[in-house]
Length: 190
Length: 317
Image (tube, rainbow over the protein chains, first blue to last red):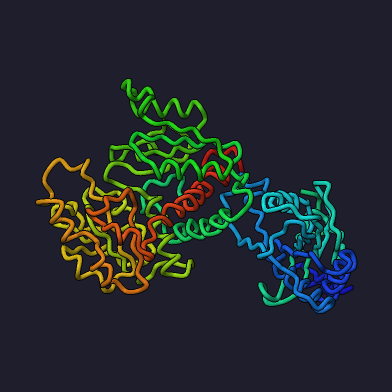
């Protein structure tokens, strides 16, 4: 496990190769649980979840030799903290042409933290259709849940303090693949 | 975004693009099983209509309901306004009922501005048409429609040539469109008989012309304005037939437009007057689409004004 500390107290917890391995393992686990990939649909939560969903879908395609529908699900309108900040710009939602009715939907996000994003995503899914099942895949689970929500597939469990920040960078959006943590591990909860 | 939307000039380029981009995302809601979002749950939107309206009121009502806001419709007919209640007392009543936004249409130019800046109410004010002054959400839905057809649904309208024809003098749609389209980089030409151009039009960010035929060949969009006879208490042109011949859009004129150019009309239309029936029903006419886009654009406006923290009241971070 690399834990190289940079001068500004940011450390890298996953590098590009580790992210690749984690996503490959998650892809295998999804296929195994789904017993094939007949009715899988991957929905990434913008921004970075969408790129991660595309990568996982590519790996499933390589394993199962079939196309996996990938979409994007913006949860902005379903957030429970909308009134705490000025109105946010919406991000794209793209539901694959086949829809999600009676499919196994795997939500893909970069970091699982309070669980509130996933709560919002479940509400959003409810308005779009009725999947047979909804599962959750995240690259990083950093703990500190505020709702009874857990991930089905986790790239890496990373214990954190609430005062720390987890930064997931993906090449498609940030120019490199990395997961970094900044802030003080021993800081008081805010 | 400012707290109120009163004029096409209240939006700078970034705000206007934010509204249009938000509307584009919200437009996909139409294809969904549940055409509703929970975003404005618990917020109250009052539609305060002192003047008759079909599409604008229904459009605002649909937009607010799709965002789960509570909607109170108030029309002057059948209310205490017909007993002589003033705008101020009506506003104080609405404030007491806890309106988070007031969508107002009024026959007097400036009424929304008065409502927004008088201190009578705390909520946002959206101008849904005031007298012959402004109708900013119409301009936004027009810009949204143009962007879909002329700019692949993205970015601004830089360099697009828009010809707006007809009764500019009485048109709140024309004024709001000129202001917003100029912000988005479009080149607007107003075409009207001299009697139907308002005083001071030379200060608007557009050019003017009396010759419709000269502005057909290079137009990306031609927007026809309704001849507002109900506001005409004098003779602005000799006869309907002559007006129609010089400033009406018929099949002959439509044939001179470039192939990609679209025909627009804010409605309601006087078929046979400013627009021929065959033009209104032509494939390049986007008049019905304008109405559909109106709901998405008004949802975007209501979301951006009401969806976030209440600005300036200090109760929420």
